[in-house]
Each structure stands twice: as C-alpha cells, then as structure tokens.
Amino acid sequence: MSGQDSAETRAYRLDTSGGLSSETGQTKVFACNANRDLAERIAVNLGLSLGSSLMTTFKDGEIRGRLEETVRNCDCYIIQSTSPPVNNHLMELLIMTDAMRRASARSITAVVPYFGYARQDRKAKPREPITAKLVANLMVSAGITRIITMDLHAQQIQGFFDIPVDHLVGTPILMDHYKETFGDELSKMVIVSPDHGRIANSREFAKSMNMQMAIIDKRRPVAGEAEVMNIIGEVRDKAVIIADDMIDSAGTIASAAKALVENGGATEVYACCTHAVLSGPAIERIQNGHIKELVVLDTVDLPMEKRIPKIKILSTSRMFAQGIYNIQKGIPLSSIMLGNRYM
Image (cartoon, rainbow, N blue to C red):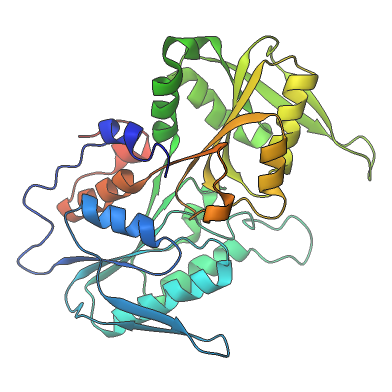
C-alpha cells in the first residue's frame, strides 16, 4: 500500500512494554475475512500473532466458523469491518462471536473499523426500519461486550448499543499526511465540506491545520432535474481538499470537484475520506474526474483492481492497536478518540 504507516507512525508510537498478558487471562486477536491484512498489522503492533480460526462457506452459502485454539478466560478481539459484501461479513462476525462466547471467553470486543448499515440510522420515511439499531441489537445479542469503531456516519449510533462503544477518529492520520505532503503551503489551501452534514468535521479539520474553509451547498430546484452546487466561501485560484467520512459511489464528491474547478475557479482538487467503499461507478468517476488525488484509510479492504494511481491508502493499524492496548491496560481512550497524541 502506497505511503502506508508513514504519517501515523510518528503520531502513534505504541508502548507495549510488559505485553498484554495477565495472571487471570490473556489477550487474543482474531480476524474474519473482511480485514485480514489490517488485522495482521494490528496484531504485529501489539506484539501478538493472530489467533487460529477457520471461516468457510458451504455450497448453499451458509457460513461455518470454528476456533482452532482455546479462548477460555481470554480477552478476545475480533477484527472485522461490515463492508461489502456486508451481510456475509456481518454474519462472520456474529458466528465468530457466538463461538467465543460458547468457548468461555472472558470478554469479546468487536473491532469494526467500518460499521455497515450506518446510513440507516433513522426513519427518513414512514414504515422504514432503523437498520443500524437492528444490527447493534444483533451484535449485543450474539455476545459482543465492547465495540471499537471509527468515524461512524452518524455519531448517535453509539447510543444504539447497550455496551461500551469506543469511537475513534481517522482525521489525525489524514492531517499528518497533508502536513507532510504540503508543509507550509497547507495554510494557503482551503478545506471544503461536501455537504452541510460534514460542516462541523471540516471546521475542526480547517482549524487544526490553520486553513480556510468552504462549503458545497447542494440544491435540487425541481424534482427530476440535476442538482445545482453552490459554493459558499472563496476557492478561486486555490488548491482545495474535500474531506468526507465515506465515499460510496463517488457521485457527490465527483460533482463537488467539478463545481469547484469549473464554477469556483479552484486550481487543484484533492480529496480524502476514512471509509473507501467505492462501489459501482466510483473508480471511473475518480479516474476521469477533477480529483487529483484521493487519500483513504484502510478501514475497508480495497481490492487490487480498485487501487488506481490516484488513490493513496494510509493504515489505521497503529491507532486501533493503541486502542486495544489502552483498554487492556486500563488507560483512557479519550485522547485517541479526540484525535490527540497520546504516547
């Protein structure tokens, strides 16, 4: 992965002196199939090896899981994003959790870098479900005792769980990348919020890096007509960075980049996000659009065919390892969750 770990290595130096074992139990890290590479890097940062497990699929599509080592009286961590294929990866997590619970694990923490179904967090129309709450109930019912996740699409989802939720933020990793890339030139650039929902996050991003800020205001004047994108703020003759939490089909971010260049007069458009879902026409839109570089985190495992030269991937492994280490040592996670340096 291009540039992986370079920025965050300096920001999150992990101190694992003394290890993660204790007299009454042991820490074990397991992985399902969604984030195997990320899980291996997290384990390495903790000075551990991934636990041995088996996750296969029967011919009819049923998923079969098995732990191949004891977890009795252990604190277990399962690394698994509920990323596409969402339902398969969710079932793998639930099945692995059930196996651990029945094998007498002391605690079961689900490390879910990307939480699927997060966009279904409310009833937007009559007779709709709140699927994010349903998924939270399933996880708790299966036996998960704690959740560690990153940049939830809607922060109120933390309240859907009746167990502790440690909500990490990926912004510091992205900030360090841009500080390293642009140096003093960064203060001359503009952070752009792609919609009203990301204004607070973009404002914090801009404040931390001493940058100006602009907002994309999307309007659909008549049903069935194309959206009109108005730019609030000055971007003319400026290089800009569009910051978002997730990019799915890339329609919004590609349209925003086009508006910034063709209507706003921006000279260059960079973009970043935590969760690179990149489904459907996303890669084509990024490749052929106005975005010069897209920086993403590895919360979603990006297939090789989607790793085009315009996309740069940074790793979250040290941050998640720091979170696990702090939990096991009884150290507050507040500094990590607020995006501050800790060790």
